[in-house]
Image 1 (cartoon, helix red, strand yellow):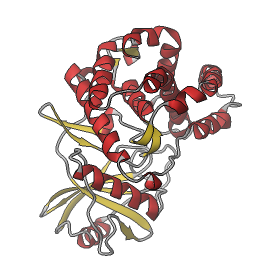
Image 2: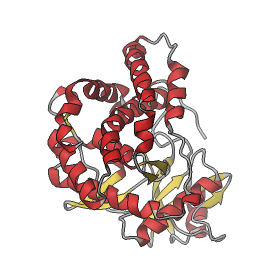
Image 3: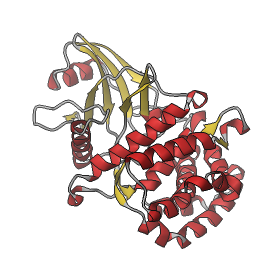
Amino acid sequence: MPCYGRALLGTFTQLDDEDARAIAGALALGTPGRLTAIAAGTINSNFALETDQGRWFVRVNEGKSPDDCAWEAALVVDLAAAGLPVAVPRVAPDGQRFLAHRGLLVSAFPWRPGRHRAPSEVTLADAAAIGDTLARLHVAASARPPGTWREGIYQFADIVARFEGFRGSRDPALAHAIEVLGDEFAWLTRQAGVRAAARHGVIHHDLFRDNVLWDDGRLVAILDFEQAARGSFVYDLAVAVNDWCWDPARGAGRELRADLARAMIDAYARAHPLTQADRDALPVELRAAAARFTVTRITDVHLRQVDNPDKDFRAFLARVEHWRGAGLGELFSVV
């Protein structure tokens, strides 16, 4: 497990040809050929494995427990059964949908062809597809017994604790963010009742563009359920709006595309009608989601010196400031 001066994406654990043979054999993936690291993500180590039976996405689940892996696998099995476009991990010899291999927890998924949308490529139809699919995901995931729902690691208290951890930083790059976030978390704390009144269930928590695959204009896969947990439905919708609905041609991609946001929210509401409490909470959750990703990109990328310009915290700080200004007014008709 090599260590570098600057963290590299998706290379926290190295796998070699011997690992590939063991994993492919245990999970019945076929005779292995080429194994290629995928430089994506800031948590797990990901690989593409070619075998005589096809291509597989292999993930080393970094920092997870067996219970974590089992819960996520059970969730995607249920989602697939409900017709959601998700990839289901292979079954190991012990019946689990992950493999314990030399102290690692490894999952393997059938390779899904497709590509991610760039910010400039997102269309009204795409935004509507995201809204509709997210609504159906919420319905299916929350049909699972409430006793099986887990609490996530990105609850409001967790995000505030992360913020407090760097609030005293003297890093000049963080000075403005610390000032803005301090005010924002104070305001969000006062909105606790509004947030609690909205409906809750099992949500994805991270439906960004890099967690969705498209093929010939069709949404073909929702990826990465490692953050899935109990949460507010409209918070999850707000997370998606905060990533998908911004114009890359203006303000370095930091200006709201209100038409995309309306298309997404309207499609969601058609598939999973919003209550008045949901509508009251949505403007608050737009701000909460923007603040969350500002904080996590500071703690997981900026402070760790991860070399990933696409996850610069300043982009989400700009969203925080947008919502604190005139941004919510642009969406008043849908909230």
